[in-house]
Image (cartoon, rainbow, N blue to C red; front, side):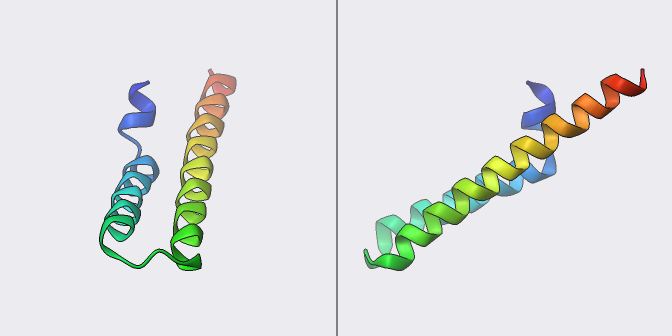
Amino acid sequence: MRRYLLNGAIISSVFGGIGALNHTRKGPRDWRLVLAWIAWALTLAIAIGTVKKEHDEQELEH
């Protein structure tokens, strides 16, 4: 679990989610809001996949 919480990609994705949340609260609700949330979800999925792949590669080396 620690490898996910301390990874730079995950931390960056969390900050992106905070930005999307602020945009949701303060900005207009139109198609750009939907795209912002889709982009955030994809970024988070890629970050999680990258951390998992790196962990699996490290296990194979040992």
